[in-house]
Length: 342
Image (tube, rainbow, N blue to C red; front, side):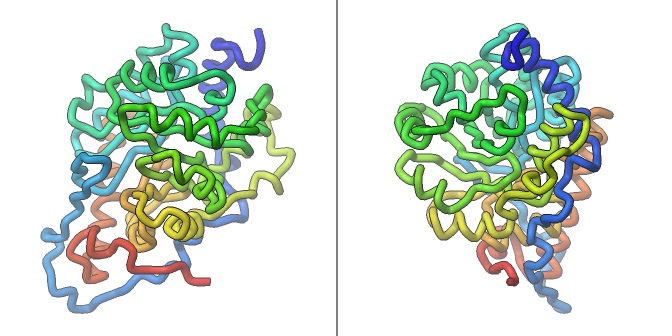
């Protein structure tokens, strides 16, 4: 059985879950940079806390708060439990949900049930997910449509993760010509497509390279949270053998600034180390349309939908308080008002 066989993909998904739960999966020295973004304080905010509006339009949908549950997993029974609990919580709170990579679903249809959450979350913005590397290895519009239609999703995220793949045993490391290939595939798709990193950050040069492809949004997925280079080494070796390489990436705050400059009209998703409502508020101030978070929800998702809902409710409440004390009546008022401190 090869490392890229469907069976090994399933096993690796389970090992990913176990590795992400370890503190060693997080960046050791790099931070998101969000902690250096000043946040205003208004002693007389001139508004009521309950009147602060978190409602946000994104990809032609209305979210109750500018929050997406980020991509996590799929392809195994434990993954199905996680996705089910995330979907139920997303539906209850009116936030979006991005699925984990669906490659295993396309190559092993028996795993499809682990991704099937639409019945549990009929009203949420649901985003499918495929790896960019697969489009350089034969995937095209047909596979993208199968991924989206197969789960009833509203949009598709295509993730770019060269450092993760380089660390992975049997990873896909042939990336030549991939920007041109995405520029062929994306315009042919009848639904919005998001370009996302996985935690090492979208850089300005990459964004400019795909400027003509027609991506509906960019998920910067910056450095400072989970390092997928670390995760892959933990899965492959049981320890991190190349720690310096695992710290490579564009911190989340800088990735947001760079993305605004490279694609000023494109909606941005801030992810990568988003851990608090204040992180979210600062990301919005840097220009993000919404924020996405995954790692903080992994343990709650293994427990219950109620645990996910409770964690997210606290997060959203903290975001509301941050906007309130900053004197902002809603997310639109705060968006794009700050630059990172240097």
